[in-house]
Amino acid sequence: SQQGEEDPQALSIQEGENATMNCSYKTSINNLQWYRQNSGRGLVHLILIRSNEREKHSGRLRVTLDTSKKSSSLLITASRAADTASYFCATVLMDSNYQLIWGAGTKLIIKP
Amino acid sequence: DGGITQSPKYLFRKEGQNVTLSCEQNLNHDAMYWYRQDPGQGLRLIYYSQIVNDFQKGDIAEGYSVSREKKESFPLTVTSAQKNPTAFYLCASSMNWATDTQYFGPGTRLTVL
Image (cartoon, each protein chain N blue to C red):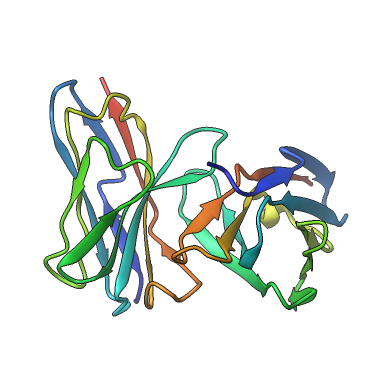
């Protein structure tokens, strides 16, 4: 069953604008991860945030985690055409055997 | 170059045939995974291997088989028992099963004719 659900399913913005994607999950997690997938390619790990962390940064990426709302957001600032991709959140459940549970992804399109 | 390779990139199969997808990694990772991706859905785990000579079924193992005879290699066979095999298949590895970051290969797109 799907643990994470991304919102929106698709997002189209102008180059230079900020893009925000959200991920909600249902049960307590050990950590939450964000990955990027360019069309027809493999996934690339972006950021991991643990359940005791609230915010992490990596370059133009900012991830927040609200465990009380069971949600996370990924912010991409000053978007570029190269950011066009699908973005997935994946969760490791608190009592799991470290299996990643994946959401269906947000498709982000950056218009030049 | 360190990384994960998958071959072939595209694969066409006739109904009733078995096909094997290759996955090789030179990252010296203990754990390897096979996922299936269908349009509009997240990744679903087919099989995983925590260490050489060991593997476990994931959520959708029916109709698939794997082997892990070498640390670097984790081939996936899609058998004729898999009712709907057309999909994008992704192989991944991680330092060990409990390590959080997974590294992915470029994928194999399988189409059943």
